[in-house]
Amino acid sequence: MVRITLGNGRVISDHADPYIIAELNSSHDGKVETAKEMIDAAKACGCDCVKLQSYTTESLFAEEYYQSNRVLKRFVQKFSLEESQLAELAAYCRSVGIDCSSTPYSEAEAKYLAELDTPFIKISSMEINNLPFLQYIAGLGKPMILSTGMSTMEEIEEAVHAIEETGNRALCILHCVSVYPAPPEIINLNNIRTLQERFPDYPIGYSDHTFGVAVPCAATALGAAVIEKHFTLDHNKMGMENDMATEPDVMAEMVAACRNVATAMGSGERILTDAEKEYAQKMRRSLVATRDLAVGDVIAASDLTAKRPGTGLPPGRLKDVIGKTVASPVKAGYLIKEEHIGA
Image 1 (cartoon, one colour):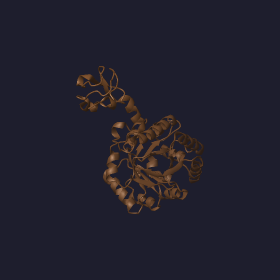
Image 2 (image 1 turned 30 degrees about the horizontal axis):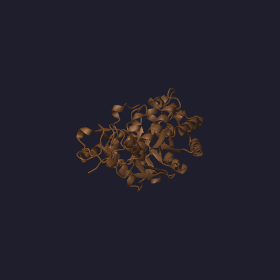
Image 3 (image 1 turned 90 degrees about the vertical axis):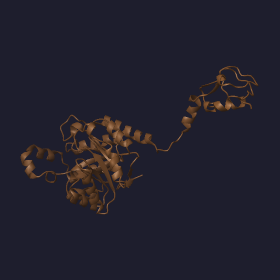
Image 4 (image 1 turned 90 degrees about the horizontal axis):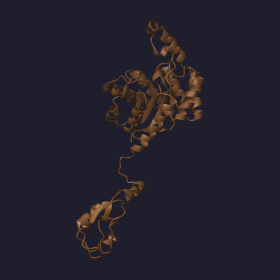
C-alpha cells in the first residue's frame, strides 16, 4: 500500500480511509472568528483537516492585471489573512483537534507555513509549471500535496521530477479538474487509476469541485488517499468560489459516505464472515423428501426436491443420494440428512 507520513505523524495511503480536507478558501471573508466557526463545523463534520490560503495582493496577481480589474484587488485584500491570523487559526485548530494547512503563493508564505509546522504544504494547481517554486517548497522538507488541475501528464511528470530532485519524497498527488463548479461529465475519475499507475511511489488523491457527494465517494472507491472539497457555512453569500462550496450538512454526509465506502471496499480477499455462514444455514436449500420414505426404499430422483433451510444435505449431493437405500424413515416435506442414507 503506497503511503506517506505527514509532519504530525498521520499516515495517508491509497485504498484506505481517506484523509478529508475542508478547503475554506475565502469563505471566511477574511474574518478570524468566521474561520473559527468554520473550523468547528468542519471538525463536527468529521473532516481531518481544514485548509486556508496564504496570499496577499502582492503574491497573487501582477499590478498590471489589477489595473484592468480594480475590484479584484479589493477582493484579494478583503479575503486575505495576515501571518498573525494564520498563526492564531493554526493554534485554534490544534486546540480543537483538527489539522490545519494552507496554500502559499510566494516563497515567503511557504517559509512561514514551514515555521508554523503545518503537517503539509498544499500546492495549488496553478503552480504545476512553476518548477522553481515547487523546488523551493520541496526544499523546506515538508510533506507536500500537489493538485494537478489544468495540467497535461507531461507537466505533472516534470513537476514530480522537479520535486524529486530535491530529495523530498513525501508527496501526494491529487487528480483535479479546475472548473468551478465542475460538471460530472468532465471529471474523468479514471485519471486516479492513471496517476496510480504512472506514479506508483506516491499516494493519489482527489480535489473535488462538483456538487454533492457522489463523485468523492466514487474517488474513494478508486482508492483516493485524500479527498479535498470546498467548504462554507453559507454558499449564498458573496465570495470567490463560495457559491460552489459545500455546506456542513452535505459535508457531513460526504465524510460519512466516503468512510463507509472505504470500509466497504475491504481487502479484495474473498472472506466468508460468520454472519454470512449463519445466513447460509437459513437461506440455502437442502434435499427434501417429496413422499414418505420407509426403511429399505431405494431413493429415486422423483423422491427429492430442494428447499430451505440449508441444515440438511446440500442439493449438490443429489447424485450421491439417488439409488441409495433409506436407513431411517423420512416424512414427506422433511429434510434429508446423513443418517437417513444407507448403502
